[in-house]
Amino acid sequence: MTAPVDERVMAALLFQREAVDHASLSSPLYRALLDVAIADSEAGGPCARVLARTPDGVDPIPDALALRFLGAVHHLVLAGRAPDLARWFPTAGGAFEPGAGDPGPDFRAAVEAHHEELVAGMARGVQTNEVGRCAPLAVGFTELLRRFERPLALLEIGSSAGLNLRWDRWRYESADTSWGDPDAPLSFTSNYRSPWPDLSAPLGPDDAVASRRGSDRAPIDATTEDGRLALTSFVWPDQPERHQRLAAALDAAVAVPAMIDQRDAAEWCEAELAEPVARVTTVLFHSIVWQYLGSATRHRVKAAIEAAGARASAAAPMAWLRLEPGADPNAAAELRLRTWPGGPELELLTYSGYHGHPVWRA
Ligand SMILES: C[S@@+](CC[C@H](N)C(=O)[O-])C[C@H]1O[C@@H](n2cnc3c(N)ncnc32)[C@H](O)[C@@H]1O
Image (cartoon, rainbow, N blue to C red):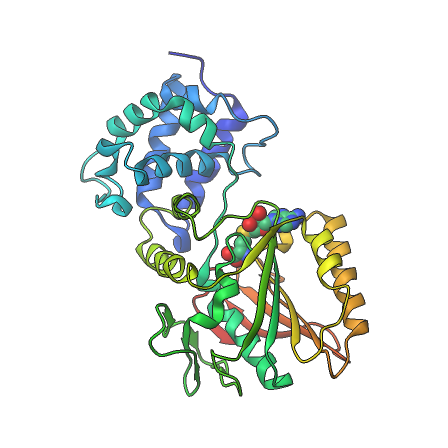
């Protein structure tokens, strides 16, 4: 046995246990594993020995140490390296019901057996690419197709693996309007609510997107097995709908190239937005990224967008589309749009759940 973990690590475990109980994010399996990790950390067991080696520079609560640890454990399970623990993970063909069996012994044994791998895994920041956010984003993209009647040149910051840069490959259905290929591998048919967003557009999926390019400070390559495993490991194991969406999007992404540059958002915007581009609508967009940019970066990104907006013209229009927390971050995300030439402030188009369900017109 070793010493119990320090109080900041314990605070991060307790914070995360609270968070996984939150109604919209509930994960009974992670709740049970966190209970084990907390008890084990107090007792100086295998979880304490891993968590005591928190990577340098990682602040346990803001850097989501508990989710890094659980993500690393999930990664082991998905890679087939912890078969006994896998029987509790729905993503590996297992099952977990609170009160029906205790995953604790298998969990502790796997943590003990894979100590070094888990320590290395905790160095990776939690990163999800939520393709469900295409449901609200599509409201903005179709609005731009109606407004300017020309293809979109997509530029995304904080793209992660760039799955949302492939938004035009999926199908969307609101009340009286729909958009996209009815045979698409992924469809959003029950996301929209009254007041219903308008998804009509003069261009269809064959013509809507002229180009797609993204950036992230730590991009994930959606087309490799390693990238697939990394993204899958950060989605909680008992959220089957998110896993199905992610798997469908990852399969489809292989056939739709999208370059994701490893660059800081500010530098990238300044470079990519330097010249107006004719015959397309240039769309700088982002979803659930703004809060992760420091205030200096936010200021530079906004300045680069506004400078590009000032250079835009009827021949080369420009748009800023953002899906980010609203005034009450616990309530809903807000999809806002500003267009140039001449756009006034960021208009509020829709509200949305953080994973793209439900979506309703503002
Ligand atoms: C919560 S994820 C959202 C990913 C994606 N936009 C989505 O909606 O699924 C935030 C992303 O922003 C990226 N990020 C954070 N700070 C950044 C920065 N300064 N420059 C570029 N990317 C950044 C992270 O690496 C991460 O991929």
